[in-house]
Image (cartoon, rainbow, N blue to C red; front, side):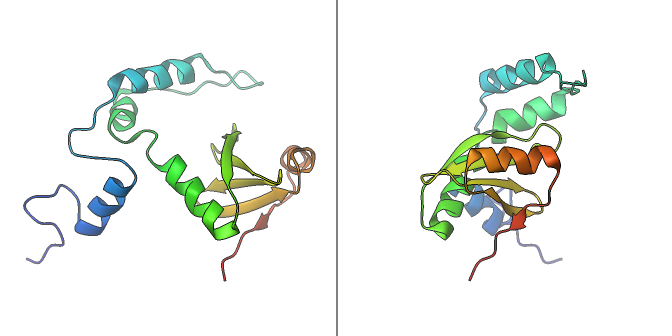
Length: 140
């Protein structure tokens, strides 16, 4: 049986390389930070009073992998756009990452792609609140 995994890595080589590039290493375990995130999530209620459920599998995943990809993801986006990008927050419902660039333009990143919300925070908020479909960012 052929496999892409070697006996010395937990993940397939390309996955292992990407995780290491993002700051992961075998044995990474920041349970203190994971508990901080868990407590914050448990304590957060949406404006409608909805709460998230926090369970051990999530906390364990955060302890090992939490916080790895945001800086790299935003760095990649900034390079693609030719600017610097900083995290702004996350959408409450979708948990999409919100980011702002040096010119004040606002973007959202989620599992479906990277999106342009507007040329400034005012327009971005109007887009989010109105539920207007943002423009998908394309490369090339």
